[in-house]
Length: 556
Image 1 (cartoon, rainbow, N blue to C red):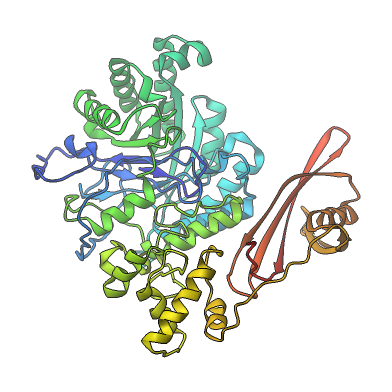
Image 2: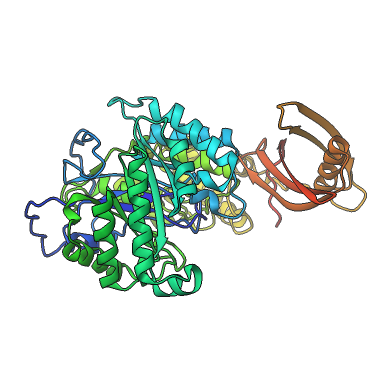
């Protein structure tokens, strides 16, 4: 299964070995992925944590009963390109650095890609798709650096070394570039693709099905002839491709040496049950399929890839008793850190309600939920935040607001060290509700002020005459740092002027955003300003980050 930690990238994937052993019967009461009906063995990728349009490579439906499993996880099996020795093992193929980076605004530098690749290795992904080497010299260099450093460095207790993969179209130039980049890794892989749907072959490729099959066979064989032991082939837009043609082209590339067959739903066109049947049909009707791994790659265009990657990894962790003992090599303690790192380097933010890694995933404001959490955490949490490396501000993830009940508010008072009588509490609770109706969140400082009968009213200074200051640091291609300070009629104007002082080029604002890093009266925010300057015929994109300390003030 392939995936990406960006939430806007498109795809993620899922691979499955094809053992000849008879699959175990599925209990009637189980609600499982359609893949289980075909008894495939999965190998999936991890791509969608921070990017809303990221796609994932498998579908699993949520289960009703919140039961956490405590089974010991088996050791990761030795990597073999075209088979998985343990049929219960799920390989994770991560495409954050390739398909994830294709999301508008998510471009990363070579140095940032290397940092993210190191984190993906620590996370435990099996295959890292590091980029598209033929797309640019910079991308080739980035993939080569990742192959040299990350692709040869053991990590974790099991000394895992990830496979480093490079994408290529079905032509020799692309394949040569991909091999030049990944060949330095201990376990290199070339991932080549060509479209197989009628609409793509007719309007994009302008080739006949026979020509497409011939190209695919030739290019897979060429990749193997270079010395690459691991070649993945993708029939682009497989979800809309003719089934019989799909079986035929997959058979031919297996004969040519493909070790993994990635089945992409490129435009997010199919429904989960349709895609599950597609995989089952490919497994049942493709000659030679037992000599390759089936991988899937589902897009999120219609929001159908949501149950992917991160959510699937955690579902396997806490519901393994219903998933037939499936397991991965993922170190879930690194999920939160990986998501935050991709956020930081890509500039794309995770929506608050994102499964597992969103800010609200382990937060509780409803009074009923808070009461249950205070009595027993398992009432409303099927996964412990500790399992994904998340440290909460308080033990129960309680966020005080207008929906909070007496139990949660009283618990907060005890946490802050206050002991009051029942009568005093009822009087306090009335005042609390008045404040909570006006504020999105009630802070510890608000609680303390209410207890002192000093309801805090924040003061705001506004108008057209106030001055703002900005300090900007820009780092040039040679590593030289330049810092400038400026005063303006607002933070954006001040930032503009500071950038102008450094580069001496007229600039145009493209993006301005401020994100809170911490909470409270001395909250720290990250301000992101993206400007472009036009010099002759070339445009230079300049991105700067500045940290500013601000008061946490709500507008009533």
